[in-house]
Length: 338
Ligand code: MRU
Image (cartoon, rainbow, N blue to C red; front, side):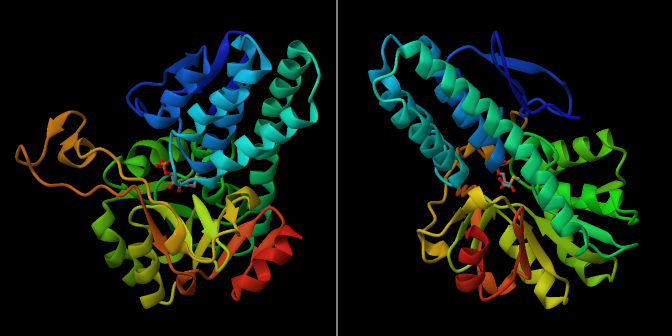
């Protein structure tokens, strides 16, 4: 199994996703500031993996804190890393509720409980993804190609993956499935990470550039699209990696189901629609340069929103660990949460 993130005696160990696929190297974050920087620089990325990293960052910060009063400051450092994936805020909230329950306890007891909670969040995430996979496997057509965007695999989670977890489970159930991965400009998560991960597991995978998606969705070869999510609003609007919206529109135009696979922790029912989801803007250099090499004239004006919002009318179903929700999401999503 690909190990995305682990708690060890020497710190939080992560596979460095900025260096894949050329190098498989692991970094050890020895304090919460390094964990925050790893999230910000996308050494670790993908909504559920960011949530696990946030929990471990808080636990790590408290190992070095001189007193329990530093908890808020540590949470604030982690909170200010990336704005879109709600799993980050979900994990901070969960760590805070453990911290609040320990009011009046010794610093060493607080430290111990926060570490075990962070380790538990990682383990739960793997189990949740396996459930998402089982719930989604039946939706994957046998003998067809699945198109995916970005990386919603083991690397984007503590293990197994959400969208790629559904594909793994479909294959495990005996279906013959191959994957088309959009390269996912500008950060190339599809080319660098999804292809690397699928090759690692011997799942047949083909790389296409983002602008080829329409051509292949029209070709009759693609049976469905499965993607992950960074935040899902109460009405079923889905924020995910930039370019997801275009794929969803093209899928609908070609009568191909567009599925979103995500844990319950990615639902943000406090937001009425996707319009309220904060969209991260990233550095211009991600667009003007590829691996440090300029591909645009110096001084070029750039927009670089890292995510877009797919309106709920394009989403055929949302696959979670508690089951599959379909429209009207305003009614079905709260039922899943229970
Ligand atoms: O900017 P990233 O790489 O963190 O964006 C990741 C995505 O958009 C994923 O599709 C999403 O987080 C789901 S991961 C299971």
